Image 1 (spheres, rainbow, N blue to C red):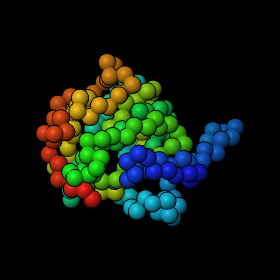
Image 2 (cartoon, rainbow, N blue to C red):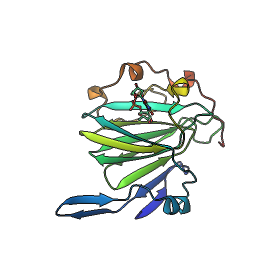
Image 3 (tube, helix red, strand yellow):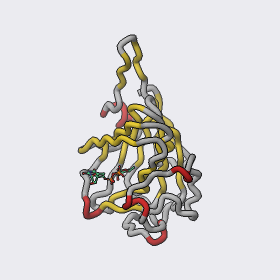
Image 4 (cartoon, rainbow, N blue to C red):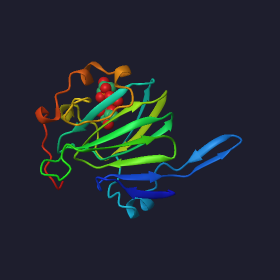
Length: 183
Ligand SMILES: Cc1cn([C@H]2C[C@H](O)[C@@H](COP(=O)(O)OP(=O)(O)O[C@H]3O[C@H](C)C(=O)[C@H](O)[C@H]3O)O2)c(=O)[nH]c1=O
């Protein structure tokens, strides 16, 4: 890891990791337990996910209800995304607020349990992320990606490509949510 800094919502941590490039291509350590624990990421991981997105695809805003709440360490293997994390912990000083960062190879974002996550691909993107609890389809939930109440300034909302599921997510105010602050 080359660096770590907490964002405007301090539970979110943006990591920079070194990319070793040579004539063959590149190598990078995406996660190393001791370094990331020391930098404040107090979790281990139990599942690794990979998704491929065409330009302008939006995935989100997703989260899993407790007791299957997931922390996510998200990064881009190839491409570029506008990544968004929304605080959905009732009672949080930042409830309904979000942080948006551009992710490309070399950057990883730690999103703890209690946040809804989504991104818009800015180009063809391979998105890889580690999660702290396994996928639980019974507790998988979503909130409306372009909910006016959230004020997310997506880069290209008019070009968004969404799944059927993501086209029918409720606004955050109506979404099922069992997160209380602090987690
Ligand atoms: C997340 C997940 C999905 N699936 C199955 C369920 C569906 O049949 C298929 C596609 O699922 P979904 O449309 O939910 O995939 P994404 O839209 O990429 O969802 C993810 O994207 C946003 C950005 C997230 O932060 C979440 O981690 C995750 O929900 O994969 C699995 O089998 N295991 C899994 O862990």
